[in-house]
Image (cartoon, rainbow over all chains, first blue to last red):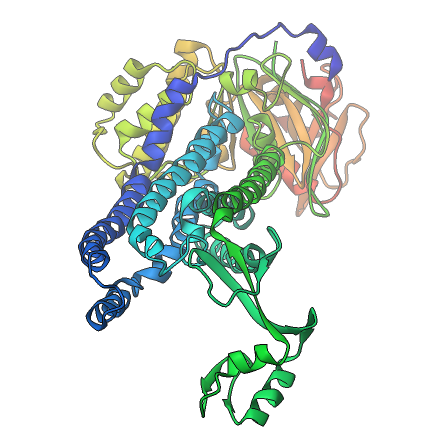
Length: 342
Length: 296
């Protein structure tokens, strides 16, 4: 109606200030924040207590001399058994960024649409876009920060294991929850859930589908990290130092990769009991070391790995694509929200 | 000044038109009643006025030319949606605070005073209030924004007669005190008889009638003739007719103020309810053009 617009009085209107919306944001996330912090704190306390014990045991282990003595080796094995794995907490920690992200993000739009309160919220003077920004942006930043802090706790907890060479920072159980990656995965869980909430218009399907997609991506990322962020390095050294993530081992001859079955045949001819994959030799009868035997016959064992020095570049790569994907998802959410008709 | 102006407005959901060919100019300072059966398109029109729904075709401006849904429009319109959506687990006080923080201006004193008068405790959860109290809370939150236009979608449908009466008096008081305009939808005709200034009848997604109540009352007659009498008459347009034995009753619109009634017929004025029912019975047969002639 151009004529009406032309004659309309100019309405200059300042938007509702963000300081007022701060209360709205706080009231909305009060409960979510309480639950999220409680869960993270409970797991953190457990990790910190465990970490303190681990440090005591570790310093005893380090001061054990001579290191090659049977008693010291026994102590090292005991340390590994006790602290090498955190048991049932391990999968919980891995899934935590996705679970908390989905929990915080799904109700944001889904509950409004499910209960009809969007008809209240989107008709207030603030306007729906500013309302959504006041909820989505702090939520995304908040959940990322909580999981970043949690990542610091995990890093601290795992430090003796890393230092002792029992685990690497690139380990698939550690990498995605520490450093920037933990924050990135939480952000993605949140963004997926907010987006799913707008599509589903119901909280439970939004949580479930967001978490399922998150889990699928986390699984894919595990493979990407191993071979695609950067090509693995290879070494022919048999004495692998620690602090690196093993990808695979295989044999070559004259620079050409040879099949496992060829190695198997070679070793069987030697009389070795070969079972499973070609490089796993469970028994070496006689005096001949099968590895040495193969090397003497012109074979070379190659190990591919990701070096520890790639931890931060990989963290940035992972955070980069997670953040980019989340921003795209949230951007599409805003776009749909603007267009969405009741 | 027009509080709502639409031109060729239409909204389609999938392949179904919820509203089409809607051209209206609703005057300010009135209580405009949007009447129609369920599914007629009333909520669709209201949602477009408050900016929740965007039109598929056509134009809509509110508050004298502001594009519907713009910040300037939202600032001047308060909406009480069907079934009064409130955050059920928020206390009344929190709802008050929330609404204050979501708007540029909010009259906390007025809202508190109204709630005190209604005996609603601020510590109570909004979800624990009775239906009547929830409606009054929603209305108090809306009125405390001092809107230029108050839009109410079936506000009294879930209420008992007493709560309904109280609610409507609150609306009327606010109109008298603040001079606000009200657009409300309803299918309860009786309660609108006393309060509506302007009628918009909607059915099957089309506007049937649009005009000031006084003009509509003035222009319509229920004419009773002997069945044998002529059905066509130059002075009127038949809206609906029915026969009982030897007599035919016709709801007619007089095409000019001086139109005469045939001498063998009797004519009387009708109320909103009769008028509305007449149009809706007819509406199923053929869409009528809106009576733009009676709009001012």
